[in-house]
Image (tube, rainbow, N blue to C red; front, side):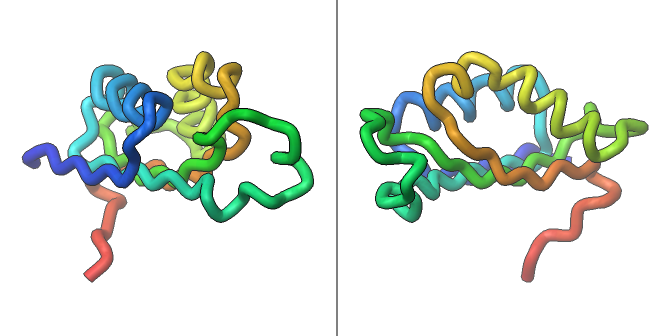
Length: 105
């Protein structure tokens, strides 16, 4: 399957997420959406200088084969440990194998 990458982000954290997931998971499909703008006025974000805090990910990779959902999420959290420490507050993840993934029409 050819690799298809779809990213909707511009900042350094989004770029780092893209680079790390691409290098370590070799995804056949990767979509990264920065949803931070939707959460700027939430109480948990008050007083923070971070502008890239909330991301929505769709990752399709053979690396997820034989892993339970929680293990897939743990793997992504492990890969993105530094980004989380640097201010990523929330990751919404869809983690599938190529056999499980059904693209939206």
